[in-house]
Length: 234
Image (cartoon, rainbow, N blue to C red):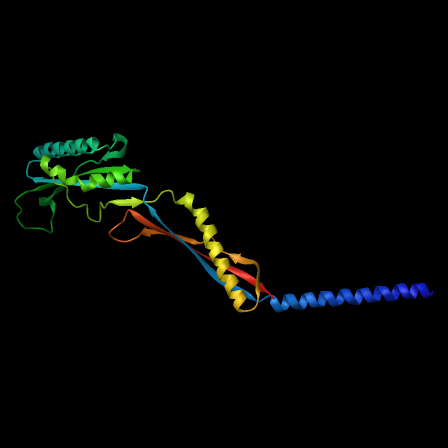
């Protein structure tokens, strides 16, 4: 009988200890459940564009469509020869159909013009050899010797530089952004005499690719900002 009482007392003691531990753990979890820190991590890279799209625009004006088409054809041939002699391949060239504007067909414009038609031609160079194309762009004035005037493409036909290898860079930048977020969280925890515990939530980050500045559109700035929420513990 006495042995049973001892066993019962031991079990009761263990139960009380276990209950106390669970109560304490519950209270700790309750006390710490709102102890969180929300931080942002940033990663940036400056990279060179790996694709260029260069629309080469030329125009002819006159009153005889047949003559204009012959002149446009001659201009296109000179531009193509210049590009091919500069190392541009046929696969990198796209010749668009000429666009014709009949000024007499504009109902809202009653002013007399010295010519009736404007014919616009666009030959587009699309290449991954950005440095080569940039060197050719710098020499496009050589076409003037051939009697070819290249006009500004304006907002409709701007030179575009792109960074298409972005997907290869994305995982590394995400890792760097998260590491930077962790450093910020650790500093915050240290200042508050705590430690970071685990990640409560995180987003995949917002990526942006912009020109570094207006003078060097072929240099891109890739940027990602990710937001991470950590729980804190003592």
